[in-house]
Amino acid sequence: MAYWIDLPTVQDPRGSLTIADDALPFPIKRVYYIYGVTQKRGGHRHHRTIQALICVKGSCEVYTHNGQTETTYRLDHPSKCLLVEPQDWHTMDQFSADAILLVISSEHYDRSDYIDEPYPR
Image (cartoon, rainbow, N blue to C red; front, side):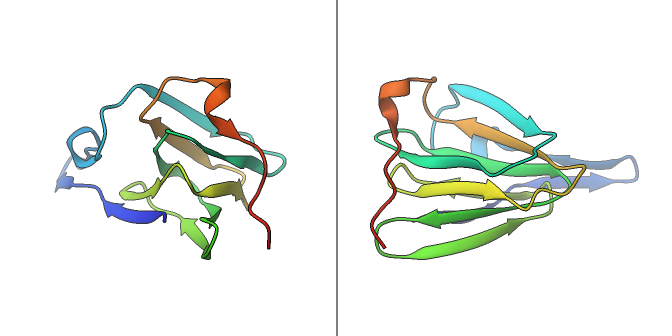
């Protein structure tokens, strides 16, 4: 089941610095970001991959379904991190016009790790 992680953030008069590397429960193997979104993204789950989702600018919603529980999360602050487990079917949508969604992954891209069939409702 997907869950929140509060990322450690240091604040001083110069601004805020949020740290993700040691806060994640996996070694980082892939990093990418999504922006300029015009339609729903995602629509899959994984065999192995765990993903950390951080909306570093703007906001978006992440829908997850783990075969039993369906939840929608709103990402709207760069210190909020949503961990998506391999069994979590997930889609991302409702992106604000300025949204940038950072994805940190436990695995390198491997098409055979993707499961494109959603859970039955």
